[in-house]
Amino acid sequence: MALKVGRCLLQNRLKDAHMTQQELANRMGITVQQINKYVRNRQKMSIEVAGNIAFILKCHVEDLYEWIEVGNNE
Image (cartoon, rainbow, N blue to C red; front, side):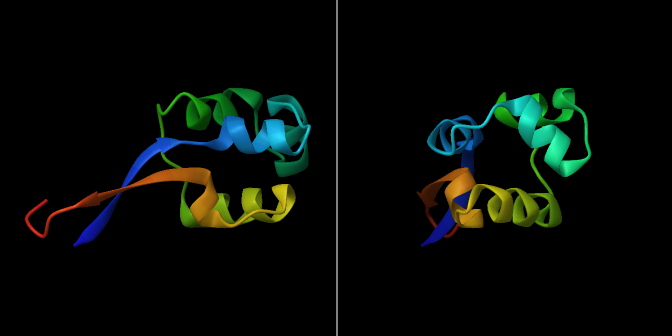
């Protein structure tokens, strides 16, 4: 059994932290458009970006995405 990355849960984590996409973008030093790409599943975060976002939002990297169990052949 393996895991596959599903949809991004960043919007949920932002809500939990009472933070806007713009505030996160400002803290990260990136554009709000880039944050929106992650939120809308148009682009996956690099491990470095995910780690920094998790640090800012005080959550685990694993909390930023849905994880789907898949068979060994996927």
